[in-house]
Length: 441
Image (spheres, one colour):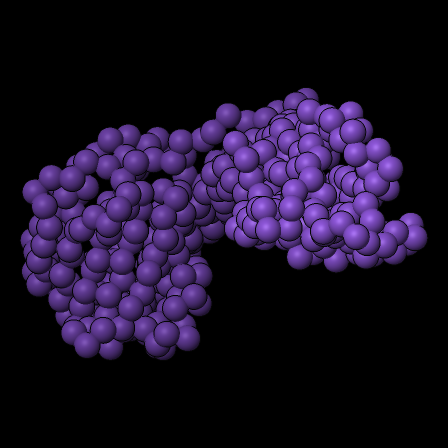
């Protein structure tokens, strides 16, 4: 879409610029050529007037195909046609007066412009008489340019259009050469954001794009490597800490005081549970579950059924079947966390499934107090809990919404919070079709 938008803007800009410049320069050239033709014709008319005073029989010889002279009596002289076509006639008259005054000419004769069979025609006349005793007569001129204005404009427009199209094609080719790689970079960035390994081709495209591809690949390797190292580190810590906690659990059984023994065992169980959840979150953040076709409605209904089986109040509203492309385990876990949070903090959960455009919306509504809008972003971070106490039975571990956020990101979607009059809603939005990676450069 980027190239199409740029190409459309370039085409419109070139067309507007071409038409504007052609009109401006063409108009000026037309005025200059018409003025030059008019001045030349009037000078020829004045010269003919002087020659005919002595030799009227030269009249046929002074005429030509594009320059016709005639003598008529004043009362027989035809009326001039109005300037209905030549809207610039007054401007040409002004230029004619200036041109003749510079060349030492006399005041220009009466002139008019008209069209005859699609061609521009100049009409001019001056008073003419051989002597003072004769009646005044008119020397009439009818002239047409050797090359018509229409032909000139057509040729000029064809040449300028050819030049503009050539330049436009070159610009579009260069733009396409650069922008055709941008979708690959955008998709690669989204894949890295989802934690998927990706590598761009470093041998294609302009020099700057090849350099950018190398830098992007290096960054991608560092990011993926950092995630893998973190998972390995947490796995190693998990193994060592599990061993220590197991030894402490065995030793706690030898505590003589029952109250102290029970408290120590409870603390050790909580430590083990926190460790398991932290390790599971780290693995989930780098989870490589495949994207497959699944029935989103069936997944949502099973989440609600499991909540009901545990004695909670939960309902499902939506279609009986909706096929999407996603991660079955990840989607199920995200909906489990959202429904569990709604039940824990609101007392009940209503899960509705709808579609908007190309996205599926899983909306979980509860009548609880919800999350203050300033905390929307903070609550997506790991180990952040909305319940202020440190009681794990009421507040959880603070990983539920962080896991949902990771699942949404892996699907190319997002998580939306909203405080409404009927309660608090958390909406998981995921594409119905998986985002397919485009060809890398």
